[in-house]
Length: 458
Ligand code: AMP
Ligand code: MG
Image (cartoon, rainbow, N blue to C red; front, top):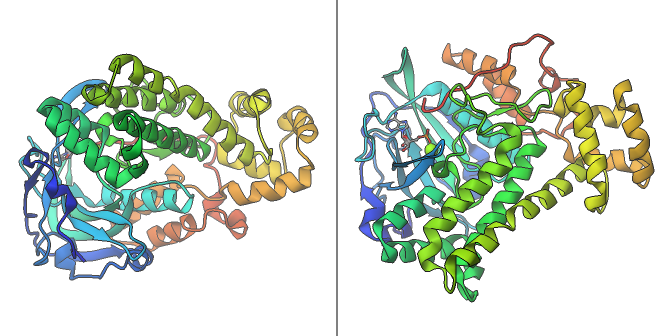
């Protein structure tokens, strides 16, 4: 591990700051992702390393500089409580960042303490691993180490450090930072990002535009993936959109139970900016910020060229979403003519206040009366209802991270009882297993369960 110096350090110095983690009192491994470690051939170093108390000799850790639009407002940011410990090349050639989160203050901490509380780190572990198991690109969680130190929020909480594994941590906000710094910085970041995430763009007539298009396609697909499982990211600020196309930053995210496009969980999102059904529009908005950062590198009539690429987003998303919904409903080879049928299903869920995840499963076995009319149209469209149901079983999850179950598992963990967390995690790692249909983890919340409220920056 750390067999190569981090390639990120080849970027101009403005992009990073060498920084050691702040040692913690009593680093103790709570979770270690053995399957991920094996897959990537990552060695289980002592707990003190993953807790930030000890730096392996070959590592050269650094904090990354970036900016971002948070709820529409531009700010200079940077890793205020995280460090890239190093890059690692897996046996299959994939390069990943190993990042410690909660590792202490950095030059970017502003007024923050650089620390993370245990529950939000366990939450990130659970959700990122659940998304991965659902087949959705996501940063991963390798380890959670408790620090033996308190962190001070509105209350005193136990502290922890999470190790995040990511294809990179380049964000829309990294390009905003580069654009502020000047054209040579922008060019360096573009070249680096192309090499790491879109090598084919290097050969294009206009690499900046080709890179933008590649990011756009990844985001269109990612948002369709999210919406296909009812995922609400909750804080799609430009600093929280990774250009690798992986889901990142799980502060206030949550999964929708009853279908409603206006669903919001985050305590601070009072306008519904990042509501379930607004996510495509917000991804498009973020891509527009990326496009304007890239403008100096676009050839010809840069504004017109970049706008033309950006205008591809609605269709790219619509097409990805149509594919997703059609697959969830067992419909083969969907075309725009199917949109009415597909949307009709969602409209029924909305008016009848049905649970999103259960509705697809019930269609496979026991559809409610309110779906009868819709099912007649559906039966005429699919090759055979039985064949369609066979296909649906493979793509519709039985288990998603339900808020009431996540909260219960985290609450128990906060009291030192990890068993419920491990049981939930085990179910989330097999989300399509039909045997789980009978499990409590497949149950929608009881009527009258209050909607979850989630928080950022914890
Ligand atoms: P997030 O809401 O996690 O995307 O964080 C937004 C910004 O705030 C990032 O620059 C973080 O590094 C920074 N930040 C969040 N929490 C802390 C903290 N406890 N100490 C220092 N910086 C933080
Ligand atoms: Mg963030």
